[in-house]
Image (cartoon, rainbow, N blue to C red; front, side, top):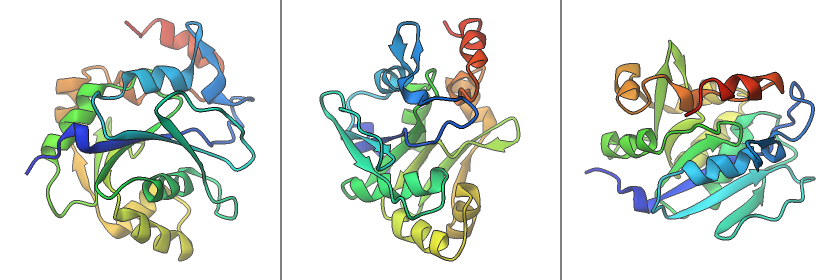
Length: 202
């Protein structure tokens, strides 16, 4: 049975340290608006809700209808801890996980994940150019406890933890139906990449 997008919560990870970028990426302006706002605007509508995951020391007022939560400062750095906290903050069901530095995320692809999800899935992860894209995926909220167990066991990588708990891949050929150039998978790690996006974005 397909998952209805209106029943899915969106999780936006915005708690990275942005060491390569040099400042808080989510607050960085591109085309006159914050990167995180570009992401929020491109998420599927309707949806069940929106959660933004931040570090404990970040103090940011969320936009209307968005809930902010802090991840676990005692956990190792990396997206795994943000995914766990985001899933824990969602109502039982399903959630999309995206990053705040993907301003060209494609709502159509996220919605397509819902039509492909199976009852036994814990996560559905797109693949693009031979690489998994776990920060553009669909997760069952029940995966939080299993991912946390892997984190406790020593896993630091989100992909390693997912491999241990189990996931299915959303193939590149399927991704191309909704995002032919893979623009939604482009993330901003360095300031000069903002200018590169200008030449790619519609």
